[in-house]
Image 1: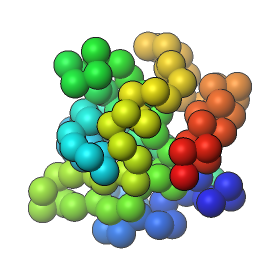
Image 2: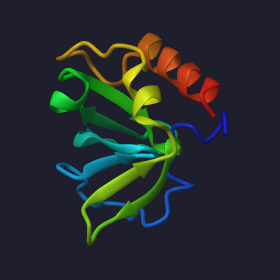
Image 3: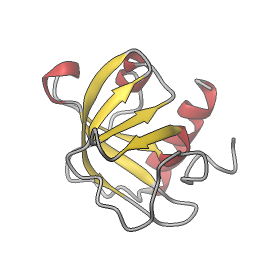
Image 4: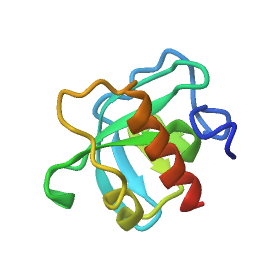
Length: 115
């Protein structure tokens, strides 16, 4: 999965060009938040997830490679991680660029370690 952590290749229901903004993020054990924005860039795709009140209002990056299913009828995205694993992901400073190399490296390493 190291090569595909930032790709949509394992996400059932993914359709290039679909706007996922506002989709509910349903972790393996429950609702985690909603998609604030997302990237379709090949080898660099992610979800920016606003955890809202569920996890004290953090915004976290979730690599596209962790998403197993996108349900357009239900407007939900299902990553293969638990709420706790997403909650414990590296901090993402509001307003920071999602393509910050150091942050992306730490996020990728974190999610590879939770596989």
